[in-house]
Length: 69
Image (cartoon, rainbow, N blue to C red; front, side):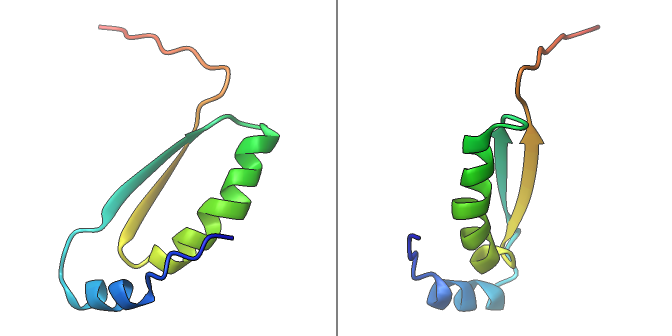
């Protein structure tokens, strides 16, 4: 696991009244690599940054986008 050493920065950010950072993660549904990324990498980082981050998970595997007017 990667150590980001963000505890000090998170404490500083909690004192500020800044808008949370939007983090959008597009991932493929039912993909083992996506699951491993979310469980092994995203979750530990998000648990440290949840007070200053808005996480948006978007399942986007084998999809088609159609624009209708």
